[in-house]
Length: 267
Image 1 (cartoon, one colour):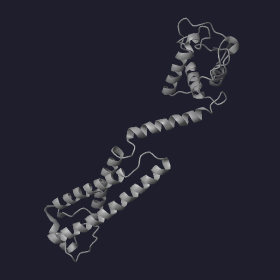
Image 2 (image 1 turned 120 degrees about the vertical axis):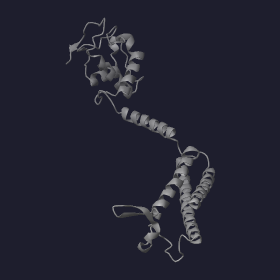
Image 3 (image 1 turned 180 degrees about the horizontal axis):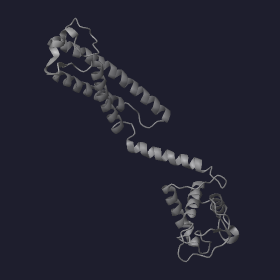
Image 4 (image 1 turned 90 degrees about the horizontal axis):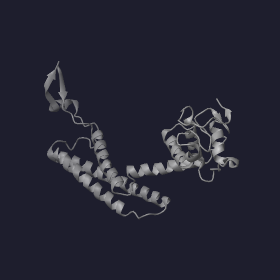
């Protein structure tokens, strides 16, 4: 058992050294294609080293077992079961007995143990690469995914218009719409949507339509003749959809000092 532990420790140290050397040879910031090729090359070398060291350690283990008398030199070299022949089961028979059933103290299957050793070694290499090497940490991967998601949202959001806008119900989107409203719209429509210079949003009467598409269109193109500027130059399509969705949350809130209804009844 001690011999196996020492072998595994030696194995890990050798992998650590070889992997560190591979990482050091990587050059700093190149194009994405060059980085990908370098990464594949480094991983390929690492896999070859792993296989070579595994084979070497396997032969070393066999040699040590033969020298210690635990394995006969005439036995098959590759014993993947780890068990003993039926005629030698008495050697690994345990003392206890339950209802006439005896237990054998057989070894774990050799293939299973070497797979386990390989996963342990891989975990060290994986940890080293992503914590100290050029691999991205979980935080970096998260930040990259957020940037990609934002870019995708802007890409799809740019396709939103007064004909395809839908009501957003996500809390994050509504909060973003609220921020836009408080910064740009509350001065004329009131912080609670009660109205002021502009109409209120809490009742069922609307001057230019009360559905999401109509509200989106009104914000996008404005109502210049009544003093409301078009916001399409200052807000993105996504932002207009967010603030439009927030505006619709005022309906039925009955804020104090609400302005008298204006426009047509919309149900």
